[in-house]
Length: 220
Image (cartoon, rainbow, N blue to C red; front, side, top):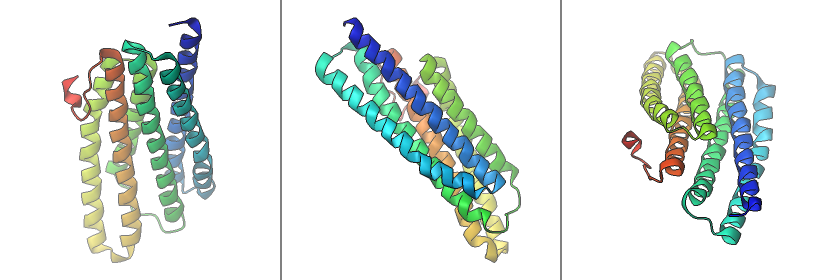
């Protein structure tokens, strides 16, 4: 492949990393809006989501152009396919940030629920998982991909515990049901973020090793 092709690959990588940064910032801000009951920050997250959507479209156009004009093979082809998958997962993670922002907006106008340390751990673990997943792509690290997959089970367990805690609370506090339901949706958003992080890790393994482990992350 000529130097022009590899320059465009580098530019594509830069755009995916830019999208990753914007997505991580959106998730971090969403959790901050939830924690600090910040309506203005929630609105900012919802409004800025279009920037991530536009970047995903630009990435898709670049990939399709490179596939059509250069017909790459081997690792270059896997890199393009992997970037398309990863940008799609990043867009969906950003959508979860928007969903959390909507829940934060709703909850900020109502009395807070009792603090749940398990929910706090779920938020922290989800953020850690996202950070490792994005680093995994930046470094094309299979070792970090394995770390991401191992963290997914912890997020699932924490989400289950949060659901149980909220259900137990709502049984005894009927007026809190609507707030509890919104918080359950928020926890579910975090679980989905973790699922997309796992997808990113699987895409990195595909790029590096040429092995499709989709839905079989334990095979790394």
